[in-house]
Length: 158
Image (cartoon, rainbow, N blue to C red; front, side, top):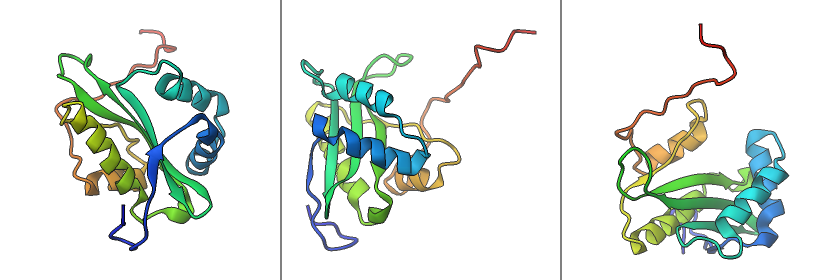
């Protein structure tokens, strides 16, 4: 796929177990924390043997290896919602930001969801994660019909 923002070619491909270290590295650049055990679990759940047909991971190659990733899944259980695609995680190495790599990954996910008959795509983004929020907004995402609520289970009820 040729990227309109840079004229370069992005090679989007399925992620594999050998990409784990790069996903951990790219995520740590964004979050400041290396979460190897967490990502190992995600790789097993999304890409492991006997993996489910409704989960997937895509990677995009940079000049020297993996430059970005996206994990997606189809869910049908949230509060009466019909089947919809969820972008579970997306990350791009900072040196490759704003070159269209995340858009190439999202386009691959859209195709995967469409092939499964799913046309509604959702995600969750931290309110203060302006770069990721801006990416999704510029890709056409808007506020959906649900509001995410949270309860701290460690606090005692007064």
